[in-house]
Length: 267
Image 1 (cartoon, rainbow, N blue to C red):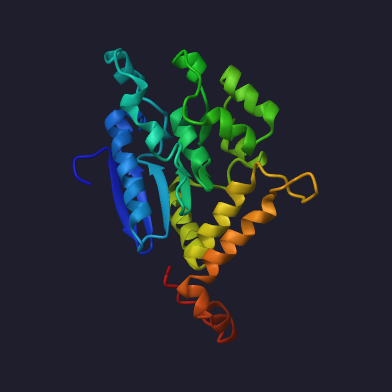
Image 2 (cartoon, rainbow, N blue to C red; image 1 turned 45 degrees about the horizontal axis):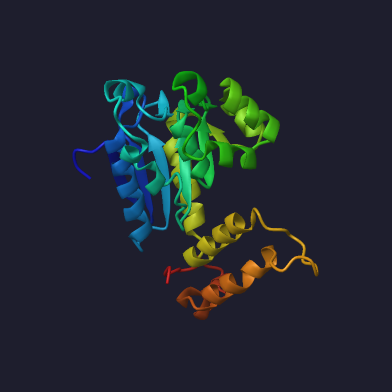
């Protein structure tokens, strides 16, 4: 992807997608969003890629959301110009994405991280949603929906209404992130985590993710009053799993019995 705010580098089955606007703390403009959407689509459609790591260039910022300087210079720009409704913010991918967060992770940048399956952050990471204070607007890319599902509601409301920000230590305590690492170790740790996921059969991984996200708003227990519960999701998932070549080949049990790494095809 040449002449773009988004840089792409592949590591085996994993793609590293980097927002490359460090002079603007990796804030995005409409062209940045378009490039990010394209990168996510390419990842989604490439059968050779099983996981992605999403990060921001430099140690100061993962992403601080929309570029307010650009917005001030383009007052007639409409929400449709940003195309955030077409990308990662709204459209969950089928494949795992890990956010590697360095420094500021604010506004729309934080909302990107909230879309990811895992978050690994540096010691200097800061998380927040300052839209009310800084832009006179509510977080428009899923923050009010996703944040209360990932941390306690009262703390989420404090962040949404008062610009309360979380350090990486606080975020880890609340379960918002998975791990804190040094800046120099961030990408290596994220890529290592991606490789751990890649060691599992990719179709089963994707079905597992779908079961989690699809069941969040469904009741857990079945009863005469409830016609559809989380357990109903298993039927479709099991059918898809058993149609895959990785399942039919019996590679998992064979590898276990032969005491070797499994050779998954992703088919």
